Length: 220
Image (tube, rainbow, N blue to C red; front, side):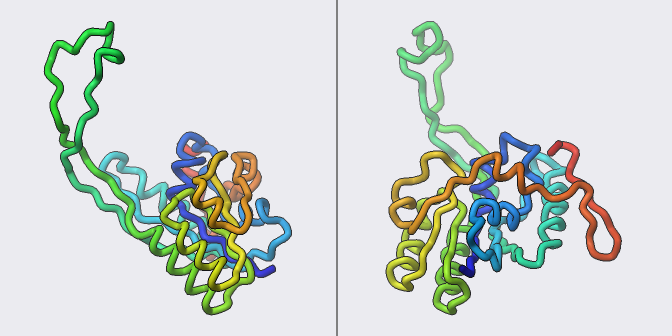
C-alpha cells in the first residue's frame, strides 16, 4: 500500500540518537522500509529545524552534512520549523531534608529562581499535523505512519483515522509510547536501535556532481 512516513526529527534524536552518536548517519527511507517491509514507501516527510552554534559551534556544520545526505534521496522532503533561544527565569526545585546531602539543609540559601537559556524547537508538531491531514485529504497515501512520541499529534492522527478513514501507524522511538498516541493510531511498530543500525548511509557518500561527503568524525 502507498505509504507516506512523517518523521519528527528531534523526537527521533532525543529518544534514540542523542546517546548513540554512531547511529546518527541514518537514512530515513531505509529505516522506514525496514520497519514497514510490506508497505510501499512513496515519500518521507522529515521535520527538523536549523540548530544553533551557540553552545557547539560545529553543530550547524554537522547538521548540514546530514541534510546534504538526506538530499541524495529523492523520496525525502525536509520541512523546517525553527529554534527559539532566549534567557529566561525558571523556578528551582529545592532539596528537602530527605534528599539533602547528609540529611542536612545546605549551608547557603537556595534561590527561588535561576536565569537559564531556554531552547525550544517550534513548528514541527504543527507542520506534521498539517501535512498528515493535507496529504490525506488529497489522497496522497493509502497508509500514513508517524515516527514520534509527541502527544500533541494525537488529534490529527485520530482525525485522519476516523474522519478520512485512513490507517495511521505509530512508529514509536520508545518502548512504552504515550498511551493517548497508541490509542489514536491504527497500529504500532517499535523503532529499535538495531533498525537504525541497519539503515545507515554509506560513508563516504557521493553527491551529485562528483562531490563526496563523510560522516562527521564525532558520530563514529
